[in-house]
Image (cartoon, rainbow, N blue to C red; front, side):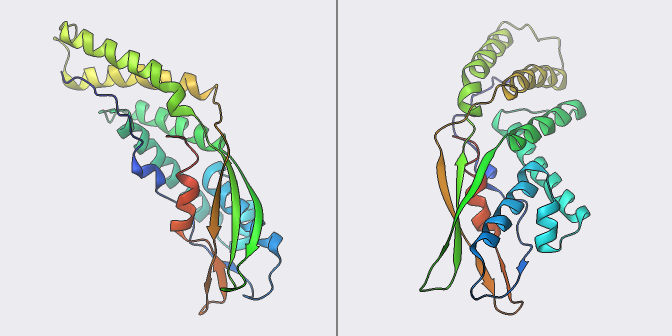
Length: 225
């Protein structure tokens, strides 16, 4: 059996973005600043909270597309949790539990579009987004480290010598995801941070939107690391 090593650095994959790209139609010049705030909130709610109505209304996206993109966002975070915590099993029950944890983390993420700003030189708008980052990784670390240390000691004592590698990995994962589930029910928030999202204007389509790269700045700050 291989000893588990507790990873102290948050994986970069958490910054991957699964929902942007759809465009907000309308004229380039003299838009209502509130429209930009509403667009950003609709985009964030669709991506992280699974709430699509405002996003679909402003972008023209269909429900099937919005739901598929949200599901992709959840899957991406579940995959990241699996990698981050060195879970080496493809057990369907473990996978489903990680997805539920990912959904809860996204659902309880706090953000607010606070201010739309017009750059007079470029004519481009940006929106400041206030984020209260979840301290999930910091909070869960002591219990996870203790659990991993205990499992390593049991491996050294040959407690699992008669167990197959697959069965051991499943048992390790079951204990770990139980710890994660327990912490999801008592999430805390760290000090607020502000992220500035800059809009892109598409001359050809006469549309304004937030790119994947811009939205990634929000995704990367939802969870403290």
